[in-house]
Image (cartoon, rainbow, N blue to C red; front, side, top):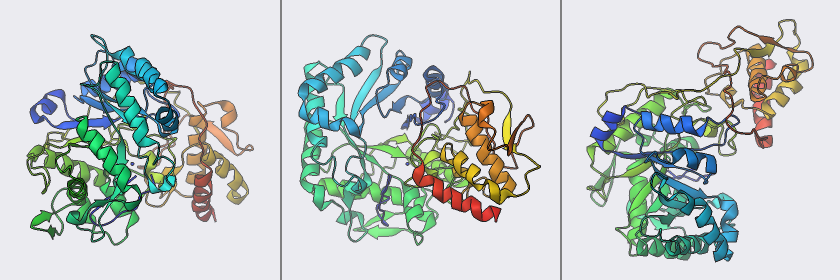
Length: 484
């Protein structure tokens, strides 16, 4: 998610109330369900969590059979997805697309099956960070998958789209009315947009006001929120009080300039992280969501589309401790629920300010109440730096960085936190709490203040190793300074 940003374009990379409240509010809100976690929650528990909180739409990043099986009969509207690494084969071979549709769509289309609405072909495939790898592949893959859906008899209901990062359009003046699609992909975008229009499919875009704030130290903080508390800007008689509306309407203008100004737009991802950056915390996340829900409840749309009912998918459902941190350490903390399905803060999806804690996941099982910490007898911490480096390279130490919830730990606390994260990641294996003899297992909660030393849950999936090399050295330096 390496994302450039501007004043008008929050370019990006990445509960809710009781069911009765959601029905009354009638807001078109879904959630992204990501699974890049060392210990994912059982899909059946997740589906019950969605139902308990009245969440009626979910967007996936693949078409995992276990998840799809859990969604069957739930009546939750579902977006299934084809990852970027599969675009080439579907672009070049219609038969493969037909086989995919048979296995991942037709299989679940039956009375009491999965209510599939969209197939997301690729995920932000035109990010500048991909260096054009998917520019020539995405559109033909979309065409083949839609043709396969049509030939299977699903095309009237299930539409192909592709979730695009907001960096596919730009505004040289930072005014929405100057919005236009990027020059290097202009012809491709024009073809995709006309294709979407001809198939009655939406343009799906990911918008992240947080990243405008994160990437630009001069960005006016209040403009990142939807509570109209900051200065406004004027563009051709339209007033903008927040970057979300400005970003959205920059897209509207970009579509308008290629003759598709009325194309339906779905916001595929929007949210606010809660840790691992000075702007990523519970207070600001709550402020963002409060403003977003209130704005949606007002049904006022955006200045360019004032009567439009916005359709959005929150990013994200859970924290994911194995996501890449290349875009920023906050990448593992987008969840409105913690890793274990516990809600982080009160919300009111109706936008009326009647906050209450969302319903937590039920039936989650935890490992034993044990923590791994550095021994009190270890006095020379500098001799153990390699141990903390190792622990963080194979776990998640993102909450130790500057501005994070565990940033105030002392040197010993940093070591204990890192040791415990590795210990939990390894399912509390005794061998995982050794670190050259410098660590020990304790049964007293090691958490310090607001810094949670978590106990991991019983995993619903097989654990895989994560690629954290770029992260190791940064966290290493951060902790090293604390030690010295």
